[in-house]
Length: 368
Image (cartoon, rainbow, N blue to C red; front, side, top):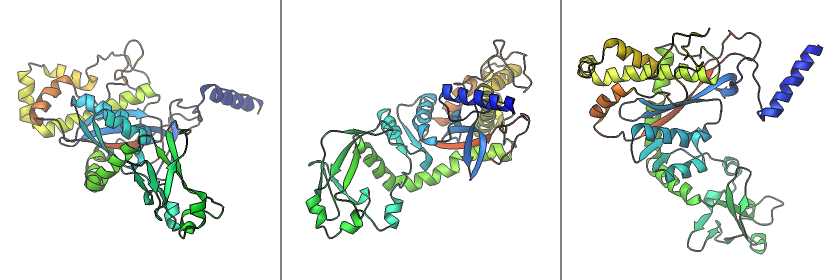
């Protein structure tokens, strides 16, 4: 019992020093993630799929269960991988984040992400939400459903997330006699306040895009972004990582994404054209396989107990940054087949359960 208490105290001290909220004794990099109402210890795989050829053009493995912080980084990685000046990126509601939309707009990335509805509770109560207030850009004020004015208060407010907002408030004398007061204020409320992000114009432009083409974009996203995960799960039987730690897990995922891309390239080009390209490139078959399975990185013969090839310096053969990249000998025929840059990319994520938190490191569990 004393030993257990000492071990628990040491773990608590480690958590306090690291600033993390979780600690796994089996896999220090794994975190508890929620999927379909279940809690599993694992990793969150992010992918970006191009709209034309359905190739994984960028991907990453993270241990953050919240997708909202991944959107801009993945869109930027896909844009660099494709070598285009502008890009259209589509993702589901989990990726919605105002700062990410602003960063995408600054980097010539047109985003389509369904917004969350934080005022659903107010709507159920029959009360007015922010959407019921009209903003007058020329006068810099809001008008409520009763056409009363909400003027900006002095200074700006910085929220805990770092966002800077301007508060707009109505006059108490106006709200006291307003016939719509019951639908706008609570029983103890004296006046209405609305917060407006200093970059709210980004949100408004995004809202306008979603109103025009959002439904069609979301329908296409479901058919594209989820397909690679379904293929790897059902056809390849890939439902769990076999290794532990960020370096090895990212290397394992790199190989699986590369295998998926390779099968897509064969489907796009056809076997005959592929063999012709290989013969023109004067690549020996063994060199092709070496480049394919090595993801253009040299492999040593050293292997750890997990079976994943390691380099002589102990790092994995597919380090972070090479994930899902198309080898250079595939890039040229793809450009020729594509003719032009894809119309856009579509985002998806997948939870890959790692080992259970506990003493038996070899056991895995959990649906994906």
